[in-house]
Image (cartoon, rainbow, N blue to C red):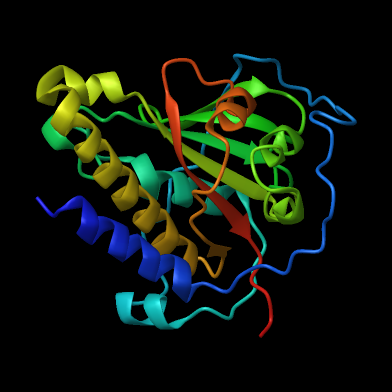
Length: 241
C-alpha cells in the first residue's frame, strides 16, 4: 500500500492543476439564512438515475482538459456519486473506491443548491440502491460556509453542488486498530476524491479539494453522527482563463 506521503503528494497535484475560483466575499453569511423548504421531508429517499458508463474522454484528455463549461444535471450528479462510492460488484458489494479490508468507512454528504430535477437541500448518498436520503429540505450551504475563512465563502456558496467526504473511522479501526486504521481511511478518502475529480473532468465540470476548514462547523452542517469530515469538494462551472 502506498505511503500517506505519496497520497498527499498525489492530491496536491490534483488541487494545483484545477483553476482557483475568484473570491470577492468579505463577510460570512448567517447559517441557514432564508430557509426555503422543499417538498421532501427529512428521511425521505430519492433514487438516483443509473449512471451511464460511456465516458466521453480518455484519461489523458481528462488530465489535460481544464477549460470547459457545463451545467449540472441529475444524471451528472448520479455519476459523480457513483464514481466516489458506487457499487461496482453487485455480488460482493465492492465499491468504485478500494477500501482496506472492504470496511468502507466513507460517507458522502451532498449539499444541493442548483441541480436539475433535484430540490435544494442536504442529502446523504447511500451506495446500496444508489440513492439519496434527505437530511435537510432547505439550503445548508450557508451553514457549511461558516467552516472556512470569511474571504473564501464563495467557494461554498457559488457552486451548485458541494460534496463533503466524511468517514466513520471505527469501521476500519475495528480490523486494523487505532494506529494503522486512520492511515487507511485517509488513503481511501484521497482515492475517492480523485475518482470524483476525474469523473467531473469527463463531465466537463470543475472541482477542487478543500481541506482548510473547521471540523466542528462541517460536522454540524452535514448533520453527521459517527462520522468525521475529511474533504470538501465544491463542484460546478469552470472559470474562463
